[in-house]
Image 1: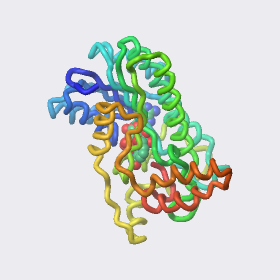
Image 2: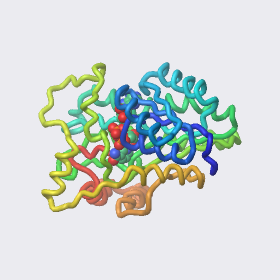
Image 3: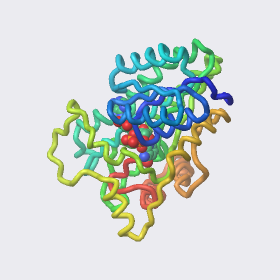
Length: 311
Ligand SMILES: NC(=O)c1ccc[n+]([C@@H]2O[C@H](COP(=O)([O-])OP(=O)(O)OC[C@H]3O[C@@H](n4cnc5c(N)ncnc54)[C@H](O)[C@@H]3O)[C@@H](O)[C@H]2O)c1
């Protein structure tokens, strides 16, 4: 798809961060935009911001963990704009856990899996049949190098990093590869893509705990304070590393350019962190120890993440 004008994009997790930037980018390219998010007020605000720019945008309060809610989102998008051409399964939670993997709260696992994995499954199940019926369309699933490449298992400050988040993002990559293949098998023009946002991004994901739903309430007493982005930045700066945020518009451009070029892997230019992929492949093919987790990812973590290692 190279002509975006008059087409429709649906973006989950659209109330802020990457999702809102995607909506803005699609809108500026002349698309109708449906932003979906579980947070009603920020969603309204995000839609207003796009509308102020003259973008044809609407917001649908949606909980991606709930199948009926995602089905209702698809119906709402069709009712409003008559078709859907791009679906970004982008909603996500940091679901940051503390301690070692075996100490993580089960509620963290359930929350992370329900939003980051089942949310994507719901998006695929609700929208792909619509795209297939039209014979064209794009599904973009937001992944992360943390899990998509390999888990950041050791945090930058030396302690264990959450295993929940990377596990869910590994699943997103796997799901998207399967989706790509299944779509190819049908001979359709509908395409699947996976987004690796990359860089240090100033979004809400670092502080997902602020909007933790009651049904995923923690069942264990926390021993350490919740992560804050300001705290992460402070720790980096204290360690002598300058934190520079990548603009969210740059991430959104990866997506729109990737759709236009029909690129499966939506990634920025190569960085040293990419070495994780070749180090991992070498470890598997050499039947060796997963040393890349310590060597290369340890380095990557120092550059790109913090103790919890979320995004
Ligand atoms: N920020 C990063 O550095 C980074 C890096 C790699 C990947 N990602 C991924 O990018 C995506 C967007 O995250 P972001 O960084 O913009 O963070 P964000 O917190 O600003 O945006 C995520 C949005 O998802 C929404 N959401 C959470 N649970 C939901 C649910 N049940 N139903 C519907 N919406 C829900 C949140 O309300 C929020 O608006 C996520 O999938 C995240 O894992 C982020």
